[in-house]
Amino acid sequence: MSELLRHPRVMKKLQKEVQNVVGDCEFVEESHILKLDYLDMIVKESMRLHPVATLLPPHESMEDIVINGYHIKKKSRIIANNWGIGRDPRNWSENVDEFLPERFIGSNVDYMGNNFQLIPISSGRRSCPGIHLGTIMVKLVVTQLVHTFDWELPFGMSPDELDMEELFRATVPRATHLLAAPTLRSLP
Image (cartoon, one colour):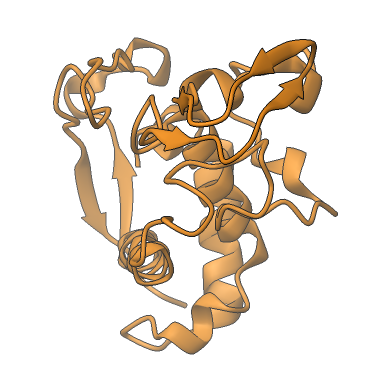
């Protein structure tokens, strides 16, 4: 929601997509979510810039291996910098710190741990068992919020004034809580 409030153009584009798919239904259903391509791009971009955890859980190498010139011995403990992966210009171009959901147009990159340039939760055999449920719930909640309400920042705050600082912890919460003012939308 923070990125949507910082980027009103993206919010309006998402509301238009939701209106086209959900129509005048009062409640968003899971069947609607599967048809919302722009929402999927927004969730991917949000997870790229704001991963659930900055560091992925430790893994152990099963054999000696060389990666990018680094020799990693068997049974070495490996911890991936998830925050850095999401901002690597080799994967995301020079504007890595910008929120651009459109970067996923025509992309088959997913956030289920299959593509190592976007692994917001984890990957491999010990990946998060709830990733499918979690992402569906995020999509349902965000879609219902933008379908039912128009949103703006309180007290005349401009999008540029929104503090996006994050805390470095096991998970990555915002340093300050988001305050937003909803207005009930009148559906056509």
